[in-house]
Amino acid sequence: MTERWLSNPRFCCPVCNVWMADNIASRRKHEQGNKHKFAVQDMMRKKREQKFQLDREDRELKRELKNIEMAAAAAQVNGETKKV
Ligand SMILES: [Zn+2]
View 1 (cartoon, rainbow, N blue to C red):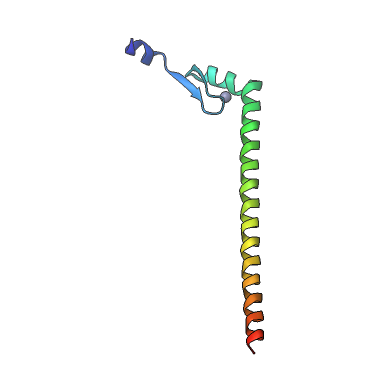
View 2: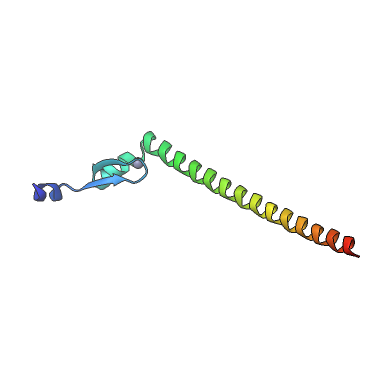
């Protein structure tokens, strides 16, 4: 049974998660199909959105830190002026 399975290698498309016969013709046929093309586009779009989301979170965090720093600096200045 194992020998038979090995003699018929299968290839799993990492994008579509679909199994097919592992030969150039089958792979090419799958890669040129609309389903695969849409899946690739969808994957790329999701990656872009993910990166965009991460960039935005990073910017917001930096802005927040800057606000905290400025608030701390302002508080320090106010505190010093009150003492004097
Ligand atoms: Zn595919």
